[in-house]
Image (cartoon, rainbow over all chains, first blue to last red; front, side, top):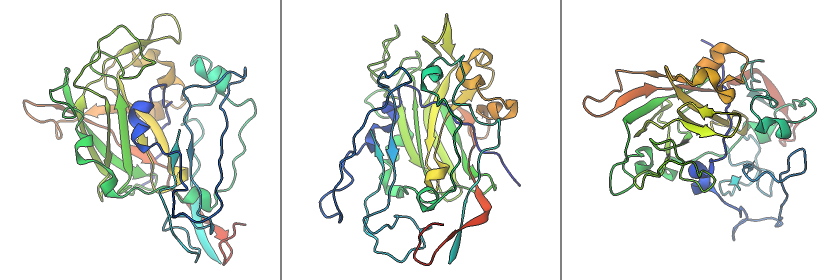
Length: 87
Length: 241
């Protein structure tokens, strides 16, 4: 049987109530190998006004290019933190 | 060479367009150009996985997070996370957040003239079981006014977030309640063209999960993108084509 994916709805302006427990702004804690990067930016609307209620999630591989996930078939070293960031 | 299938793209019309002028916030925030669909790579077919122990077991009962009970009608919101191939989505993080019974969010932007409830925060999370099932105990959220247009009111709703097995399966949505008179007037609910897709956001009253003398049950199943049948290709060293 085939189903259809559920419709997205806006996260709305109050998502911080739900997501705050997952916020992390440092994925490169001591012990994580690789070059440290700091990524910063702003979310703006079409008039150039700041969007104060946006949410950003990132996901990435470790410094060897390996993802912390069983579907990554690469034979590369895996040492991970949960690679998710919400600001 | 190892072949890994990507995830299916959404059926046209079943998702809200980025620009939907009746939903005023979308006007300044929607992209001007159509999006370009890129092939899924390892970055999209993988994603954060959360161990069961990340979830606080008490976080699935929003009525017991404080010293007293919150005001409002207790409800059980439960259902299953499935994919488009009808397979359960096991061990995935489900988060919810909502207004209290008076229609007020515990959030500094929400200054709507309605009382906060000292016994209700309005957020919870759970991890689905091996059959994709989740269950929350909470209170029915109140409807509330918002500034979208004259006399705008949001129907009662609970926000849901699911991760699923991959970054491509991430979903944030809202659960509504059967018979809510505000639904036909809500630009957020109505921005999706496909009526059946819209109506699947309305939870169904459910005797099976209703607890006598305690709480009404509402059922809300959530479907995440399923695997494509055509695999993507990777080199032996994992470089994406």
